[in-house]
Amino acid sequence: MVVQYDGTGYCGFQRQPELPTIQREIEQALTRLLGGPTTIIGAGRTDAGVHALGQTLTFDTDNPIPAKRVVTALNGLLPDAISAIQALEVPGEFHARYHAAGKLYGYRILNRELPSPFMVRYSWHLPAELDVGAMQQAAEGLLGEHDFVAFSSSGSSVRDTVRTLRRLDVQREGELVEFRAEANGFLYMMVRRLVGALVDVGCGRLGVEDVEAIRESRDRCRVITVAPPQGLSLIKVIY
Amino acid sequence: MVVQYDGTGYCGFQRQPELPTIQREIEQALTRLLGGPTTIIGAGRTDAGVHALGQTLTFDTDNPIPAKRVVTALNGLLPDAISAIQALEVPGEFHARYHAAGKLYGYRILNRELPSPFMVRYSWHLPAELDVGAMQQAAEGLLGEHDFVAFSSSGSSVRDTVRTLRRLDVQREGELVEFRAEANGFLYMMVRRLVGALVDVGCGRLGVEDVEAIRESRDRCRVITVAPPQGLSLIKVIY
View (cartoon, rainbow over the protein chains, first blue to last red):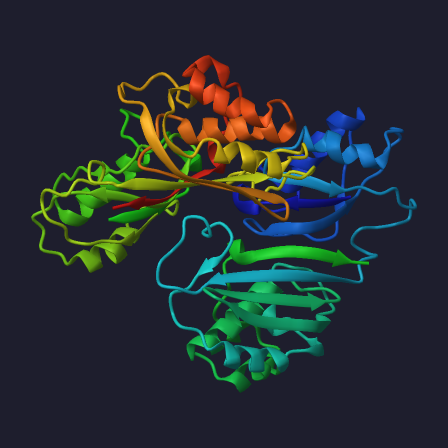
């Protein structure tokens, strides 16, 4: 199943006792719809405040309800901040996370002096002028297969920190600066740390060549700025 | 001063004891900024859940702070859902409401089967197919100077219910149906009742000619559908 959500009011995707999470809401709705306790496996664990335009998840059920009807019925049970957009029957061995070939994330900066009440949940408000050309150059230096440990946060048990960054675009669209990052997988907080480092370049706090040097250092302490969660969206999971 | 706000979490613009309102938030922030109790006069009283891209308000102060600095300083004190975007010194007799020559409102419908977590605060989700051509025709029949009492809700003490509707556009933009309504003034709930009647036309519940007949009837009970507040925004106040 593919779902969208506004992560603003939630403590992230993953189920946590007593806390409002996306997983808990979806499991509660599915349990009600399907008439039996249902647990889901998501393709990725988005953090608190992070959104999804296309998060993928799998679940098992004995209920013979057609997949297509699950979408409409579930949307009647889910809170407004979460919508199912597609459901498909898949072979039992399909796993939303292990079978993902990659993920595409988007990040949005509102780059103007005045804040916007309509963008505050969906963007990082940065009044400082950004040199998008320099950011693009720095982004290019990160593409390819590398150890990205310097752009990850501790708190994850992942051992292999090599990932292939296939795409890291930065573009200005009027008052917005939009990022697209695609990789075979991302380390914990990696997109927000990549965006943070590129913003440091855009503001002149880092030089273009510093970003590649940070990656090569494999030193987590060298990345200073971490972009806040509300600008980030999981756009799609690639299979 | 011109302000923007996301009306979702508020009980409308106008101050009400014990309730969160836009006016209360702005008055609290101004009182803090200017160092003395400050009350504001808004150009219009948007309802609970209604947004503003350009609400105008006036206030008096003895504080010599330049108008331009009020915007930045106030945005540091206001909640994220409210932003000041412009401030100007005006003659003491200027009144935000009495001197308004008109108002422009926008209304947005998400016209597709699936709901969107990102549009739910800012649009009316209507899965039914809408005949926008018929809605446009019906809208044209409402333009001009008329008694619009049939499109107002009781609960207002206004005696003169004649208004000049200068513009009532309906346009499809992909999955959105967008309205623009401009008049020298609007009666209580008038935009939402006009939109509701046009949606009735778009769904075939009313014929094109019925809308003009409702206006001519001067009968409040004849308009059945009232568009919900979250699709509505006060775009600007015209002076």
